[in-house]
Image (tube, rainbow, N blue to C red; front, top):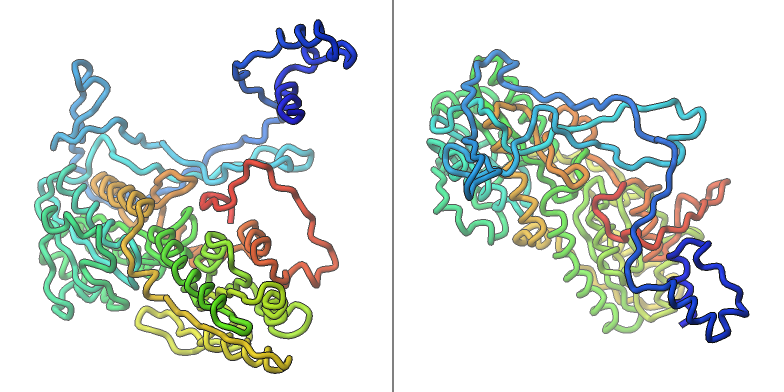
Length: 535
């Protein structure tokens, strides 16, 4: 009761709440106070702080086919309606209604978080702010829609949502723009001009109507196979003028090269990328599609590991290896989502197996406390102990050492050295978490990517990619995207800080520092599992 009264008092101006404590103890005093309290919600109040935002907004430039010397058809994308039931809407030539057309300078700011240090003396004054072009339908089209022949291809490994992206690419090309033909290229770059993975499919909305409900890749995916001459010859032969490539940062380097090759050969072809990575390691964007689905799928493996650890005595330990070559996002977010993990190992943080910071000592302590323990390790963790592998796969990715088996044997050895027995159950669900269908959130995200990529290509942009930045869909210049990819998780950042708060494992970084870590209390409204937050 006291707490409720205090809160209600604090919601009013101080002057209105000043009444002597003696008066409040009288009937008249309580009545007078009741007159000042209502059940209405007070209006919001604001604190004025110095202006922390200034300078110019610099929008990252995109390549446009018009600027590369190709004449634009300047096809109007809309018919305007000022009255009647369609008032306020613009309608495309195919009948699709748009509530808004994206303007030339519509953009999304990259850095939306401002801190107190921005306004302090000596901070350097107003800073220029970087922004990216918004995604969405444009008022004029570079291509005549009915003469567009498009090709769609998946490259690299599997990921939840691949079929969703294809589904929405085909749907937007067909329903919004009524294009002439859509090719589905089989098995990655090899599908251009070879029959290695079968001939291209002619995609229709009827053919792809249910594929988004399935995991894997309807078209098939593949690593390697980038042959510029062969691909360009195929595009010329089939009179293709739009190419949509779904892939990771390596694939995007190929996308940009292809866009340049087409322009240099005088081919009026828009080449668009859709970023795809199970590891969430493509830079600039909030997250990659399929990442949340993979984190969700990993929960079953962790729960199974916990069940095994609880039930197998003595000293049961469940060990789960998850995907994550150079970044530990899947391991970290799966740990945070599950909430019962006692140890999380990621590539960004060195792994310690000896001394007071030993992860093995930590597991032993946890087992002493509750009888069992659960550990999650990313596949790229521990290279500083196992060494790097010189071998690479067809996509140029280096093959990783067997960290799961290494950890399993080290845990058993550690307990044996202490005269104890340990029952270690090792679970590797790697391919299970990437082959599931996309969950609802990723499916929605894929719809934004598929629609946005088509709108941009139809407007004449090329050599670009698309993704969420600050929860808005934007167009990204590929050189900017690949320059900072693959990204890694900040080992001094808030995500890793949250992992340590859940697992209570030793903090390898702050333990040996001459400066103690400064504790900053989080506000009550902060999100524990926010993908849009600074990593």
